Amino acid sequence: MNNQATLDQMRQLSLTGMAQAFETIITLPLDKQMTTDQLVAHLIHAEHEHRQHRKMQASIKQAKFRYQAAIEEIEYLPERNLDKNMMLRLADTSFIERCENVLITGATGCGKSFIATALGYQACQLGLKVGYFSLPKLLQKLHLAKADGDRRSDYSHSTTMLKWQLCN
Image (cartoon, rainbow, N blue to C red; front, side, top):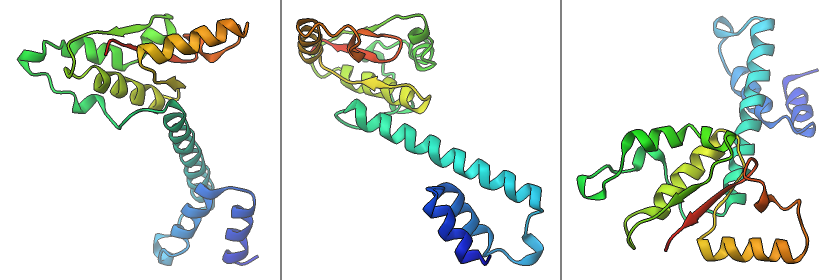
């Protein structure tokens, strides 16, 4: 089987990450080629990374964030009165395992939504599912789920979905 046929089969089998890695590897000069076991390990690692990235991107899209934000972008200015140690503890998302919610309060325009989004993105990057809601939308969804008698709703399971309660 030639390299193009191998690439075609990888794509046909939806092994996109593996195909991209293989495509890069076959362009290397012979003295830079990997051994067979290195090649297999590299291709499997590339496919795993590709799938993890796609899963994370799907989680981010499903969360319906208003914008992109990252923990590293949070500014700890004195007038904001933010505790950097607290933010770093929240960024490890262990509060989710403890079934704890996060309530972010503050004046209009102080960055509540940005902080919630940054924590949500962090959770998505760690493989968790996130739902981003303002307080009125969250209450509406909970009310609808209760009215429908839906006890299996994602909105009632704090271990599988973060609920950001913003006071805007």
